[in-house]
Length: 563
Image (cartoon, rainbow, N blue to C red):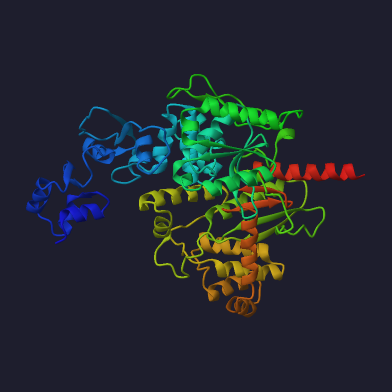
């Protein structure tokens, strides 16, 4: 029999007696393992290889599961300090072992039924952590980490999760930014925005897609240098400073300690650079809308928000109008540009998406809702983007298996995420069935979209593929199945099959992917409006509508000026 220690360690460090008995363990084996020090018994029936001081061990010993910031810390959440231990127990629990230094919270069945053996579901932990954060900045840091790590997916999802305990906490979604890579980048950006500065994150400054962490007030290129990524990058960092300067920005670097311990000095330096670069020019500070700011004491459970005014005339599509909306890179002679609309009066919309992306179908519906309200014409063209090009055509497993392996998440966490996505999809009229979904490689589906495009039927084919994949459990990776779907929208099946088998449109797929890379697109859905502005993610219809109206207004202004 495999040793008790190895069995428990292989299970992640915690295993119930029933599972050990199923592997042939007896009471004598278990007693010997505990006495030998290889495992401990934090609670009756449970065996662990974790040290007694491990927060997970403590939570199980108390009789509950980690929640809040202490649960997020085990998953690598960003924090300036070690969080206090908070343990969730069901409201129906009758036997607890109180322990000094541990705070117990009582949760209802909606929380108790989700999560794993040592932690509540990560989204439930996040909802509690942000409202118990010691400061507004700490709450934003956690929200940024959640966006960056995929715990929440877009603004709607973030609002739904962050506002579970306090309604005003939902507005943290307006501050959260999935473009953050570290706690110092998150904290620096938040502090500058609280000071009234205008921030754009992850701005492309180099010919090969090199990015600066943030641009402050349109004139300062700020890099936050953490130890993890910058210890051995002296020459590369100096080259990026040169690219920032060539891009017309004042380069500035702030280290981990400069952000954590010397922020007043760092902020003064940024202020001085902004004044120097804008000398003789009216400052941009305050000209763009800023997410609502906290007011009152910034201690635990006290931060809240005042009302925000967002005049339409000041809403910049490429500025700070939305956390994930940004201006596209400057176009050069070598940069592939989206083809203008064939209808001169129509606003051309180029959409990069993947058939296997649930947010792309949701984003499609939200954009369509905005287009229906827009007082003008739009012309939509879809472009290819593969989220997981290494996926086999016949993946052995379900969506939970795929995401667990692809993102390194626990199965119960993935199941909770998928349930949340399905709920969001239902709000826009989609009926996602992740249980029936057949995960596959999507390159042939993209080839079929280009085939349909050559026949003027790309929009119908896009809709059919999304519905087949997410709602009907159809296979969209095999050429025979794809040819059947092509026939269902009226295309010639044999012609479609021949195009797929010959790879006739593969070069067009690769061209789309190269264009995405040159434009700095790293995730989908991504909408390019009029070849100038980019909107990332499945944003609310109102955001798309505002962007369309701004493009239309700019066109009208340009036409008037040309007269």
